[in-house]
Image 1: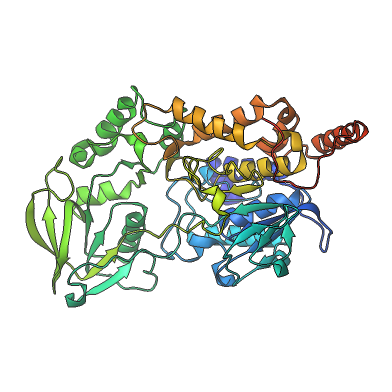
Image 2 (image 1 turned 135 degrees about the horizontal axis):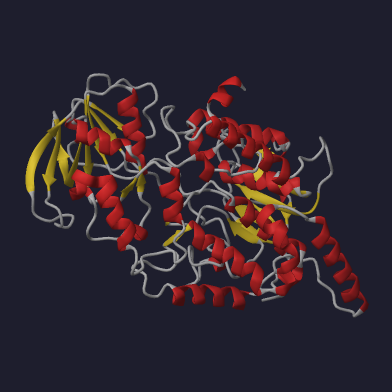
Length: 509
């Protein structure tokens, strides 16, 4: 407490987190409590899967989590990255559950995994998680219940796919790799490696490159060279700037996008404006969030080269260095970039959603072109939470995980809120029209404020969803709309209108 009082902003942040926890965290179920239907199968025990499961059981819905990996992989990608890795955006944008308590602005990998594990235990999810259980297929029985792999795993009323976007490490094969006398690692496999006094070459310029830079800095590498195929927008590690950029409600490039781009060039890139892209706008892809890379380039500790990898030699990499504006594969000057360690910052394979029924992948409504980007039009009882997005400015670990989960719970609880495929497809078509002039496809890029607009439209458009608004957005007041639905059910029963037991049939707009 004494340290917090010496740092008033940290004290206020901790106080706000405590308040949000008390106000918005659903009450964990009692040990051995009997939770009711609808019952939901959650595929994946990463950050999203654990968060979604805690929201479900906290509101009285039973779950079963299926995780392909062992228990050591609880936490998903965060359980597999380096110990030197940390959060690049401020933790205020990484509140994946109201009960999360961050002790600082930029928690490291161990702190993030710790919060996920504590959440998993707090909501009694140990007994509801099956590790080493890969989901190969999901299908429906004759009553419309969902079956995971086979009937021995039980039947479910809803599905949350939480497999994320980062699967196995992507390790490309480059000519001459076997000739290199130094060491070659993937950016996710750097824990325990020694780089002190060595020259590190990083291949790639995205989020994985940030991870490699953190490793090189922590291990006191003598020099770091980043070999990037194309220019990539870099934004500062600043909570205010990152939030402001996420407030672009249009979710893409507009006639005013030149303003934040100009400000970034002038006040962030400054003397390094040659590194800023000129062939693509800021709101077309996920930017690299890092302030250190600019400082290291200015100090001479790091160098950023634009060009193409030609192959390995014994001492380093043959690299075709291109001038600004020359496209990938274009003419340049070939040079040898020498190094002791090569880090392949080439990202991860995207986990497949092929276990879902085939009718979820019918053109033109294939992921990410789904309702709210996560609900396939043919199956409103499926929510692919955090695993269909392509590019964005915002956060993958924030409030939207709970909102998506509670929208699914609303659909499962109230048939008059559950949209028909026709209306889900019309919303997709509408969004495409609204973003017709964006340089990317409608769902290939979005911002966090656009996501909030999607949620708001979803609730406001259908009057039967209005009673669920506080529950969907904040997790408050589940019992009131539930009692309203029960009263509606009694009226429907008197009129001879049944809802049936199939939670996957849309009955509303």
